[in-house]
Image (tube, rainbow, N blue to C red):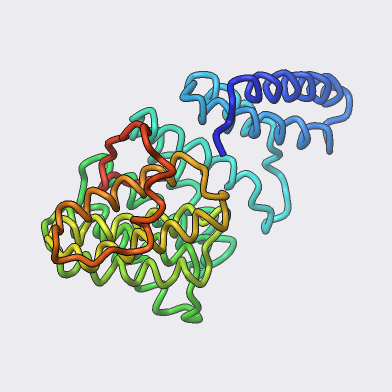
Length: 292
């Protein structure tokens, strides 16, 4: 569902008021009030990030990190979560050095407290690898992912969205290196892991499916690409009611793939849904770009 401008404005006013009240209370009561203030700031930062207002988002997330207690129980990962959000924002702003510092701190915290085979640590390593790919440093990305995959093998073997993220980044790295066969294997593994642990809104699962479909399209294997688009549509139908901008993009990609494949492709279920998007604007996306 699209978020209207007025909804952002209402949320902004509400969160600003809440943060102001909490901040005043936090001056005299530096306990729960400080944490509630930081939570409001994180929510506001996420909202500004979605509006592409990265300057305000950065200021709010930095303040949230400053308000987060450092002398907490060893297993309290709130600071790591907020630093991770800040690091991801730095990536969006192309501040790669600052992103590396924040995300590396997160990875070290999770490794020391939760252990190297813990899914959250694996996820932090995937974020580091995605940063290095975006930064144009495939060597460090490969080294990070090699270690992460080793930790996955050393763990309990259970599929998780965090291990899925590592397999996806390895697939992306292989795509950049033009090794489509290896990329296919890693992306299939990523999809399998995300299928068992899709995470919130299934966004990572959808992204991995899209990467795999685009790989098949790049390779001219349109028969394999089309069913994947239909899987994406089914997921979007279930989690986003089939009315999102992402739904429109998937339908457009599927329609283009259908045309590229020509008469060799039988009509698939997605072709019956195209009438819902007459007049919709085509949005070009880079299928290989890492998505945080």
